[in-house]
Image 1: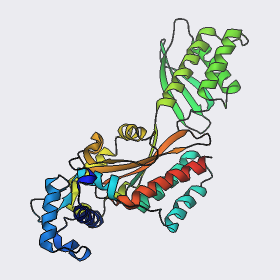
Image 2: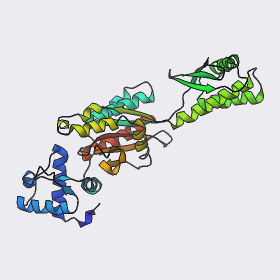
Image 3: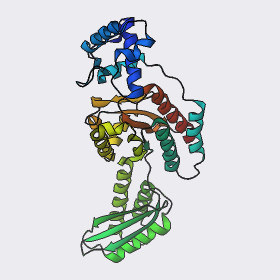
Image 4: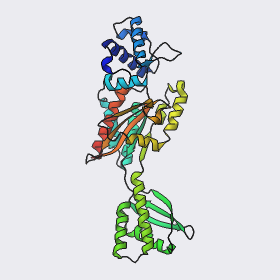
Amino acid sequence: MNAPIPELTDRMRQVFGLVVDAYLERGNPVGSKAIAPSVSLSPASIRGVMQELEELGLLTHPHTSAGRIPTESGLRLFVDGIMQTSLPGVAERARIEKEMQQQTGSIEDALSAATAALSGLSACAGVVLAPKREMRVKQLGFVPLDSNRALAVLVGMDGNVENRVVNLGPGTSAMALAEVGNYVSSRLAGLTLGEAEARLRKEISDSREAIDRAAAELVASGLAQWSRDALQRPVLIVRGQANLIDEMAAADLERVRQLLDELEDRQEIARLLESAREAEGCRIFIGSENRMFALSGSSVIAAPYRDGGDRVVGVVGVIGPTRLNYARVVPMVDFTAQALTRWMQ
């Protein structure tokens, strides 16, 4: 940042704040006449202050317009030191909480509802990183592919199905695999992958069950790998991408197209949200501050939420243009994170 807040005079701070407010509200370059009614300066004096702010790297002006817009550095200064926020309105808070309370299904249903409400209220794309959790085993079966491979089919209690090709060790027959699969389905159903693996290994060690040891060891190793993968795999929910195509998008279709393309990369979005897990409140990424959204010039506002043990279990936020209304959206994201924390408890 080129100009710390203390280096701005009161007049510069006032003009700068008015320019940013007007730009975020309308999305267009702001001229001296637009803010003249709000400040006791002549248009000529306002233009002089704008020029000073431009020299400090806080404002810039498109070559086709005499008006100014804030730079990314200017937006960062505004967000960190000038912007004034307040709680979301009663109706907005009620809508977010109502959408969550109406959900009686899975955690993902409540997270999806809260994110959809946040997206609608902020006119951004809503995103949430769900708590990592392991599948609970319902059924395990095998389909022989050839003498050395088989397709393992794992069905979870929630109905999700995962398939993996496994390499068979010497002497591991299809019948032995079927026996172990039947044992897992009948005796280990309802356990998490990690719990099922531990129980199966104990049975192997104690030799309590008449199951093929090599096949059981193969299955136990497979359950362990499935468990590790599940805990490393982010569960990302994205809602409201259509909100990004508003009446102002027609003037900047390439940026919107770029942003929609970026939203398809769920792994990168998840990694970005992960970086906000340690934040005390909202974390704000403006434009090129985050490599992922540098091309589209987009901003991300994200905040962590916690479970009953006060552990951070996920992150909720919004993605939108850099000209979004930070003063309104930041407290909205923060409130949603707090509401999710209360719901998780």
